[in-house]
Length: 285
Image 1: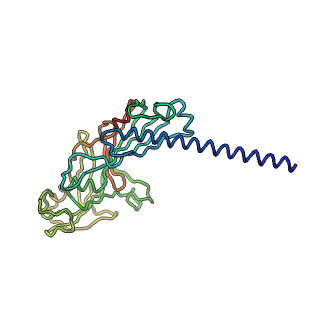
Image 2: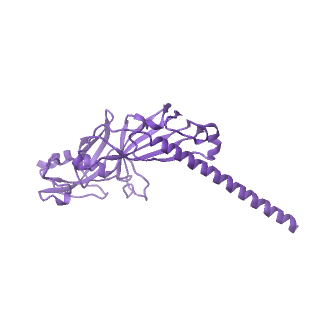
Image 3: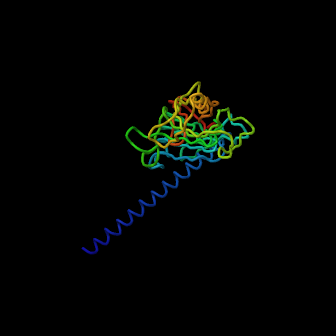
């Protein structure tokens, strides 16, 4: 009996070692495939560096053998966006996409000119508060997304990522009376501005007009989420709200998709578009 137990133990160890080796080989192949696709995507003229790529599905080698992949998630950060005044700084955003099941080269040997046949694309262009501040010319702008009714939080880890298109809270400082923020004497720091000013929180609605992001402030925000209470005279209320309203230039999206809707994403704002069956090339991301 002791001899049999020893054989069984040795056999179990061999099986575990073999399984671990197979797993490591599979993970290594997946990492290699993700790297190759990332490098291929970076051939796109507007992608400044290798984007983050995560291939779906396990085991990777099984799908790579036939070139039939369950999906992939792509995030390209630092993409330059149009329409920012140089004095305010360069506007940059994150372009992302999730491909559904797609067909591509076998063994994960992706290259820039490959044609990927995908069942679906869900794409986004995401702007953080710094970029939105440069477009709106409100230097200390912050963005928050009120949590669901009856639940505290504004998109933090305790709530998960909260997203909505109406009632997003923008907070920032504007001059009184409000101007367009283009005055050369208006310093780049709201804290350094010595003229009359007010810091307010407003509720904004996000929408898409002809593929462009439209931001429309609807009222001053006084709800339960973190905000700034400020007295603004009736004669200036409409003008202050107008400072938080704007239609941005039409922004790029992955593979030339056109924005279909706009929404907040925690403390960011993003354009979203979805497409069905289509063919794409990495170097045209």
